[in-house]
Image (cartoon, rainbow, N blue to C red; front, side, top):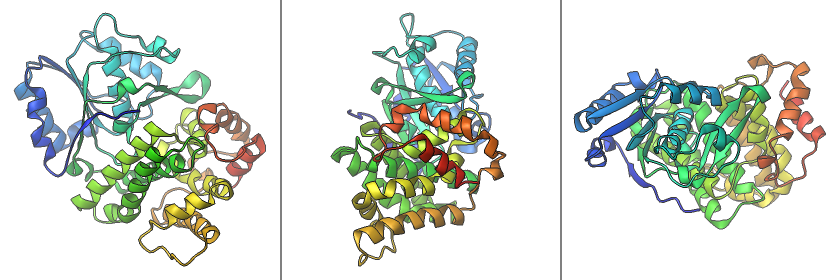
Length: 378
């Protein structure tokens, strides 16, 4: 899969996008109510208004959006055609912006229902994606994830047609993230990188993205949270997140994401938090089947002990994951999130339904294995 996006990155890079707006008559600007209030986003919006005659602002994208949320957004649009979709926000906003780039092409656009039914679109309107969190890597993935409340899970609409024309990685737009959001989104990026690196469908292209991203993430995740105004650390986290998305585009996630889907889809646990809770126990399960790759990842830690054996390094990486989640003060048990053992059957069933990801696990996973992993979280 080719990622042909033009990437603009660095502090103040947002001032360089004016040329993308030239000759556009109508722009769809997609964000959420929190992000739109940020001074940097307001400055960007004013820049767009100064260059483009007509702007439609959508600032009500909810966290973990469902197909009903997207349908309501579509109903409120003044017309079904735009010349550029700009998405500014976290993964939920960027996923919705990618979907709207498919759905606002014009009269022959695909519909949301047909996308959910598996229709493969062939074109979209132009798009610019600007992440304000360093986690999902949505700007580099062919995926848009929607909650399906009726089935208590999430589904992925997947097509390389959604990959954007332009991506802007602007560190100052991430500095206002609360530390717990920076932590959970950073762990989401880590899950993307390590899962894609160890998936059954891993390949040299995806592995290169994963290894570059892991090195950047290990060196910067705690620093970027400790020093939120450190623009170099924040930019490195944006790149780590981008590489995680690129790894997804070439490989795919597996056990952590499959088991986090029902936590988000049915119980509305934020995606990064669900992944953080599941990271260490899932990787402990996967470790025996991926020792050499775990050892490769361990070697990228700034304080790695390179004298350890491959097996010792693989154990040490799992220990690092456990300690990192604790140091970032993220939840470590499902009870902290209001989940009880009575919910286990629903969780196990929901995770096993995500066969798109389960088939990527580099070990055989049975229902009892999934149940046992969830049980470690009580």
